[in-house]
Amino acid sequence: MARFRWRNLAFVKCLHNKVALITGGSSGIGLGTAEIFAREGARLAILGRSATTLQAAGQKLRGLGAQVLEIQADVSQSLDMKQAIETVEKEWGRLDIVFANAGINGVWAPLEELEPEEWEATLRVNLTGTYHTIRSSLPLLKKRGGSVIITSSVNGTRMFSNTGCTAYACSKAAQVAMAKMLALELAPHKVRVNVVCPGWIESEIEDSTDKRDLERIAPVVEFPEGAVPLTRGAPGSAEQVGNVVLFLACDLSSHVTGSEIWVDGAQSLLQG
Image 1 (cartoon, one colour):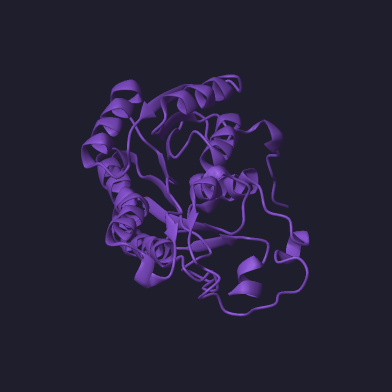
Image 2 (cartoon, helix red, strand yellow):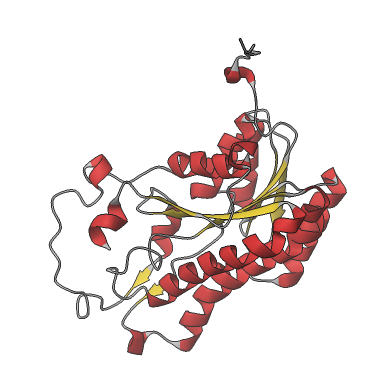
């Protein structure tokens, strides 16, 4: 009869001593994920644009026992990201996990009203920012292998009924294509690349969304009461997304790469 060695999994921290970079890490999904990573023993580099928000997030994470670097940077700027990675390397000499999470909703409007600079601003943060984040991280990731997780969305991947969010949806669809390309390119280096696609999640990103004249172009659609079937209409939480990111970051998903996971309570199946 085979013999098994049992261990109490409650005391095993799956990210013990690993170093994780989380962009957009001072609020919303990024901070929620950082809290989960902190409890799992990771050392955290949280990146954001607001020094005040970063400081508050850092204090919260240190209260959970985490070692934390607060890095003020703009993901859309190549030099910022290069310097951010140099800071991580100087502090810890390694990088195991990159959560490319920073993003904006930008302007949602009919296409003829969407100005070129508004289109470019959304793609610059969401898509080019993801490019800069991953590209800058590769020298460190390739040393030991690691995990890259990208925050995309239900929009542009499985849901297309949010009329007017063309720039946002295109940026999110492109992130999935990027992940699949890089999953193959980086596989020889033992670097995995996956995507989470959240639906309606409680976060601050909605506060900065500029929606204009959508009533004029929105299709007439009547959903059953509760547009998020699993929760009867309630939004998901940052922690629920963070738990999926944790799975993709740790060795439990060691054979998973080039995949996207929707975290939306079946919202996109109903509203797609």
